[in-house]
Length: 82
Image 1 (cartoon, one colour):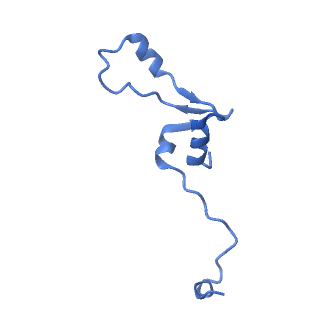
Image 2 (cartoon, rainbow, N blue to C red):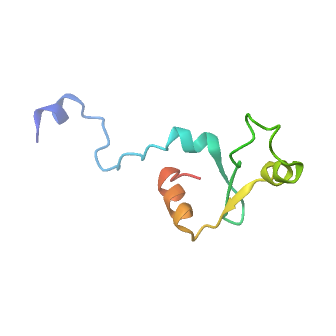
């Protein structure tokens, strides 16, 4: 047995380490109960006077990624515990 294990006999060695969640993804994406991913749409921060009102209304709605899409698979790896 290696020396560093002898120094800490109470450590459980059979447990796998936890996976880190991506902090930026935690702030930007939310998983729904049906498994889809919600996100805010880009483009509503500045330079809004030149934008049509219709465009602004459509940007206010949440965007959705399906769980089976390529973005959905990527988000599942970024947020393994959601």
